[in-house]
Length: 155
Image (cartoon, rainbow, N blue to C red; front, side):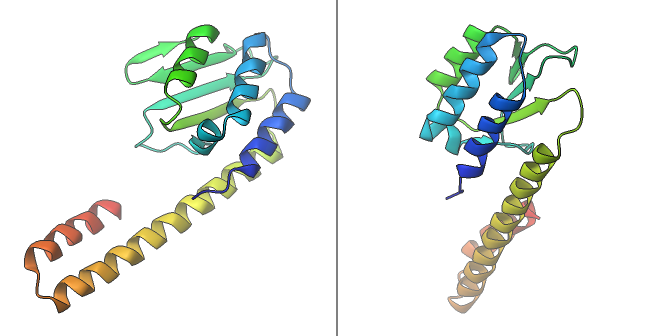
């Protein structure tokens, strides 16, 4: 299970240090940090397996405050975005911020997330290798081939 406190802490930081042209952005950020299921499913690093992404731009960036992409659908309507997040709390969400200038704390959070992703990948690969060894010991060719295929996809 991923530790989520750094996510909530970062969202608090954003709420206290940045302003948004659309007040719904503040509402959505508070929703994201206060719901355990939702905050557990947030990622600050892009991932091909995540089908939803939400970009939140601070005031002064000349970008739309909120943009949600899900599959081929793109919306910047805050109420539609809130409804989507609320109705699909179990779905993964890539959360991307746009600030007027670079933000060192945001870079640090992304580094933490990337390190966690790498660690989880390593753990998964190690588990697959152990299962492959067991399949070889048991002379289970079908399981061995299936596990090798999974390992190739993960690397």
